[in-house]
Amino acid sequence: HTPSIHMSAATLASRFDKIHAQLSSLQSQFEALQIARYELPSLLPSSSTSSTNAEFKNDELKVKPTDDEGITRCKEACQKMRLESAKFHYVPSDYYKQSLTARRHLLKAPSNHHLCKSMIFENTHCTRNDCKDLQNSKYYMVVLQYTRKFNADALTKYIRDMNDGIGKKKFVFRLAEEADSDRLSGYFHNAVTPFGMLHDIPIVLDKSITELRPEMFWLGGGHVDVKLQLDVEEFVEVFQDKMLVLDVTEPDE
Image 1: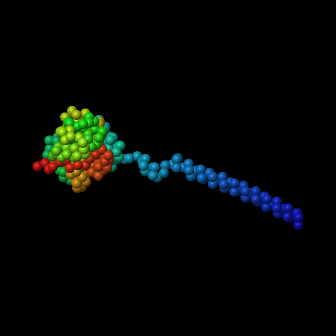
Image 2: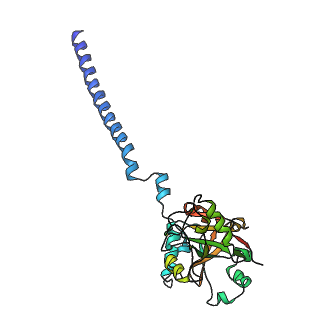
C-alpha cells in the first residue's frame, strides 16, 4: 500500500501546484482589472464629465463672413455664455425708419412690448469713478421696452436707498454722452447690447420685461441692422451677478 500512498501524494501535490498556478493567474487578472477600474476614468471621460465638457452648439451663433467686428463680438459673448435661446435677426437698413409695429412684424415678435433697447446712464455725481460696485456704479446699462419711458427719479431712489450714509446729492442720473456710451460698450447708437461690452457695466433690467408673455424679448445685436432675440429667464440667469431688476420705467403715453 505504501507505493500507492506515495503516488497519491505525488498526484495531489501536482494537482495542488496546478491549482496554485491557476489561482495565481486569476489573482493577476483580478489585479489587472482593479488597475483598469481606476485608470479608465482618466482615459475615458465619465458621462457627467462628457456632458459638462461637451461642445456647446447653437447654430444661430455661428459667425458669418459678412459679420463685422461688433456682431462677431456679440455672438462670441453669447457663445461663451452658452445661450441656448439666442437668435440673431438681420433687418433691412431702413428698419428704424419704420413704425414700431412694422419692426415688430419684421422680427415676428408677439407684440410691440417685446421690442427693447439698451441705454447707458451716468450718475454724474457718483462718489466712485468706476463700475465695480453693483449698488453704486458710475454707469449703468438700462434695458427697457420701447413702449415705456425711463424714469430717472426711480433709478435715483433705488440706488440712493442702497447706499446709506451717502448724501442724496451724490445721485444724479442722466443719459450718458454718446461718446461715453460708444467707448464703454464698444457699440454705436441702435447697436448697443449687453453682450460683449468693452467695459464691465452693471445692468438694470426693467421689471416690466420680466412680466412679458411669452417670456422673450428682442434687443440690439451689435450692429444697427442686427437684432438679438432671447428668453427673459435665460438673460436673468446669465447676468444675475451683475444685474439689478428694478421698476425704473413708466408707460410711454
